[in-house]
Image (cartoon, rainbow, N blue to C red; front, top):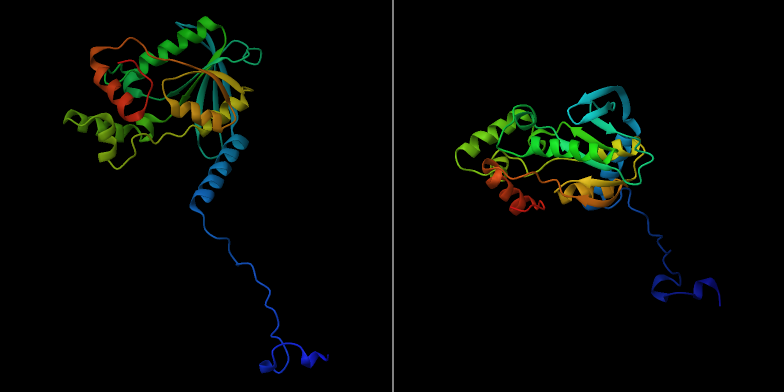
Length: 242
């Protein structure tokens, strides 16, 4: 049979040429995938760029620590207080502490931040090895001035979570990618985490740090902080006994 006899006679005996599917010029949008990939890139940049900027001896009422300043090229920084030989410890105690000027410095009783910091320093000193990572994430990440605005709303009856939201912020906008990068830079891949916050555990695990134990970090509850702690437990999921 000739080639002209092949195919549909209505088309003169010839089949129309097969069209090869072409790939779209741009990938199909996938917000979840794109957000994940961007998160991976950000963590990689933080790890790669983070460096030790300064280190010194720091005697404190809880013993002598090494204070280390870490920073990257994106003007992000944190401070690490180090005790003992961390590389020899199987899983040293670690506290990730968010800066709190009103609590840590001015002894505010609106929160338990200073008490948690002191408890952590004492526990690490007793253990002989550990680290406190001190991050500038004031007001659960909204900054000092906005935190004071949130205080003003709390004076009018809103709780700590409601106040942040009324200012247009999430309840907690902190990010712990830099803390994970700092631990890796310090040579730590397994830790016992001093925290009541499950988000910190999850964040370190995502950064490749194994949290072998979550150690509660709850000082004695004071009258002025009781309602604040109840809100953290009910609305932020913190693991507290109040």
